[in-house]
Image (tube, one colour):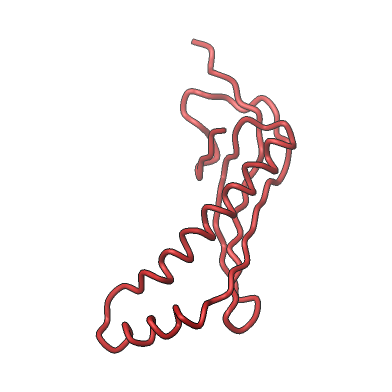
Length: 108
């Protein structure tokens, strides 16, 4: 499955547009991670506990989007974007979305 943030894919042409494909992940913070993050806030720098949490959420949302595109019959997703939002105190949603399409190699 080709996944691109661009509206087109070099060397391919879109032969069919299948519609919106999306995937999301909602994650809650962990009290242990919050304590470590608060301690890191004192000295500054990256908070790897949250970096890992967001990276896992992003990958899960992306995987779910790709699976939805496959179910639609796509072999690519173009115009991919990510959005985050607060769902509740201590919970965030990460949404990946794009347009599911069928692409073929361009003819020379």
